[in-house]
Image 1 (cartoon, rainbow over the protein chains, first blue to last red):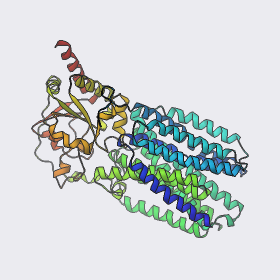
Image 2 (tube, each protein chain N blue to C red):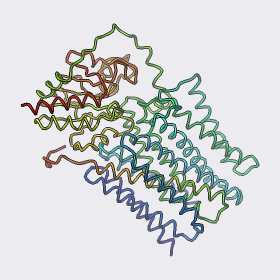
Image 3 (tube, chains in turn cyan, red):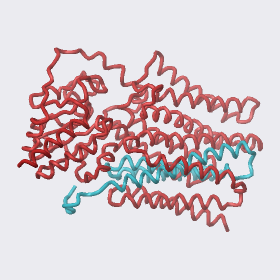
Length: 100
Length: 469
C-alpha cells in the first residue's frame, strides 16, 4: 500500500526534473530532442519484456511480444536518428570564437 | 541478490536518462546524449532480462529482431520525412503501453479478482486510454504528414464534431470509472474492450480535424501523451524506472506544446477543438492588389550589393526540398563578405525544430540559425529579407489587424527589412487563407516559382557574375 505513495512521489519529482532539464535544451535541437525522448520513453520495453517472457498464458505473452516489438523499434530508430541529426550540427569553422 | 543488481541498474539508468537530456542543452554536447541514453536503455533491458521470472526467450528474441528490422530503415528516412517518422514512433509508443495494459488486465482477471485493486485499475484505465488514443491519433498525424491520399490534409470539419468527440471521451471515461469500481463482474471484460475501442476511435477523431500548420503542436501533445502512457505502465507494473523515464518524456512534450502554442498565440483547447480551417472565410476580400514580380537578374544584383541578408525559411522550403540550393546561395553570399543569418520561427515547418535540422544537414553552421526573438531586433538593419516558402509567420497582420485569425501571433519582422524578396510557388493564399500585406509593401518584390528552381537560378546568376568580375 505504501508503495503507491512512493510511486506518486517519484512521478512528481521526475516531472519537475524533466521540466527543469528540458527548459534548458537548445532551441536548435527540438527535433532531435523529440526523437531522443521518444527513444527514452520506449523504456516501456522493460514492461513488455516482463509480459512477453514470464510464465503467462500464450495470448498474454503474445500481446507482450507485440509491445516489445513496438518498443524495440522505437529504441533502435529513435537513438539512431537522433545521433544522425546531432552529427549534423556544426559550429562555424572559420571563426570558432564567434559568439552565438 | 539478483534483485539488488536489478535495482542498482535501474537507478543508474535513471541517472543516465537525466544526463542524456541535460546534454541536449548545447549542440556541442548533443552526441553524448545519445550515448548516455543508449547505455541506460541497454542497462535497463539487461537488468530486466536476467530476472528469474523471465522464462520464455524465443518470442523475446523474435520481437527484438523484428524491432531492428523495422527500426533501422525508419532511422534512415530523409530529413524532410522526420515529422512523420516521429509521429509513427509516438504511435508505436502508445501501442506498446496500450497492449501491456490489456495484457495485464486480462492476466489479473484470470488469476483472480483480488489482483485488480482500485489503484491498479486506475493505472490500467489511464494506460489504456492514453496508449490507444496516442496510437491512432499519431497514426492519423503520420498519415497526414506523409500525405497519404485517403487521409485528408485539410482540416476536416462536420456538424456536432466537438460535441460528438467530447461525448465519446466522456463515455470512455465513464466506462473506465465503472470498471475501476467493478473490475471483475461478468460484464467487465466487455466494458474493458469497449474502453479500448472508444479510445482507438477517439484518437482518430481527435486528429482528423487538425490541419498541417497545427502539426507542430499536435505532435508535441502526442509526445507528451506517449510519455504519460509509459508513466501509467510504470504504475501498473510497480516499476519506478518506467515512471521516471515516462515523466521525462511527458514533461518534454508538455514544454514543447506550450512553446508551440505560444508561438501561434493559441491555447491547447483551441488547437485540439478549434479546427483552424473553418473560421477564415469571413475575411472580406478587398480590392485586388497587384503583386510586383522581380527577375532573377534584378534580385541577384540587389543581393550582391547587400551587406546583411536574413533568410526566412518555411514549410515551402521543405516541400520543394530546396535546402541544398539554399546552402549554395548561403555560400555564394558569404563568399562576398555578406552576413547571412537564418530567421527561424518556432512553428516553421511541421514539427518543433524542423527547419534547424534541414539546414544543419546541408552544413550551414548552427551559429547562423537564429531564433525569432533574437533576430527580430536586427531586421530593421537588414538590407534584404529573403522569404522562402514561409507565409503566415511573416504576415504583419498578426501585429496590426485585430480581425485577422492570426492576430497576436508573434512573427518574424521581415517587413522591416530595407528590401524583401518573397519566393512563392503560386499566387494563392497561405494555409490560414489570408492575404499577406507583406507581399504588397513598397519594398517587397515577388519571385514566383518553385523554391528549389528559383534559389537555384539565383545561385547560378551569382556564380556566373563572380566568374566575370
